[in-house]
Length: 202
Image (tube, rainbow, N blue to C red; front, top):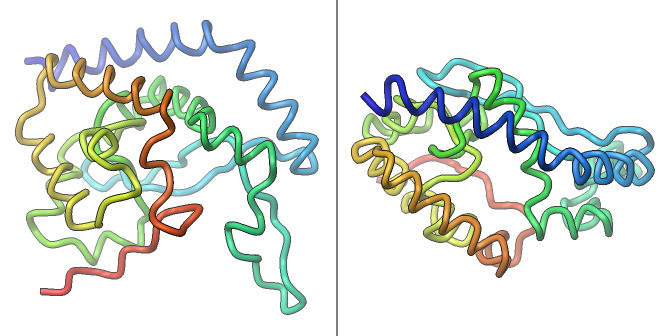
């Protein structure tokens, strides 16, 4: 009942209220990033959603597009702008995903949407993470985020899918707020972003 009907209604109402309440911050961040990124405040990328349906995720653009002499993008750490570093640390880069929630691409709570190229690399068990809409935050994010291994993330994701409930979503929401305030688990060890998933080793 909750996962099939109520969750979507709650997501829509909460995302709409969130965009209205956060609109002043949204506008300020958008203006700051427009200046830092030559008029490009948003980052768009294809991600797989529920039932592996591909959609375009929207985030604030925290890295510039600077390239080396060979035309290749510089490493993430060198492209992260000062304002982008602050926005990433405070998780403000996630705010535009409320638009994805309104559209029905995402949920507030669920497994994080990853890259389409990972789809063939999942085990049958790991594929269960796509049985529900992906979320802005999720069980894996409040249990380590980018600081834990891929295998552990997927284990948390599947556990969430199998135990989804209103009370669990509320628990994840409050844990997320706490982690945002202490900026915990945002980066993996030594990385600005998490490392790429290259498949299972077994």
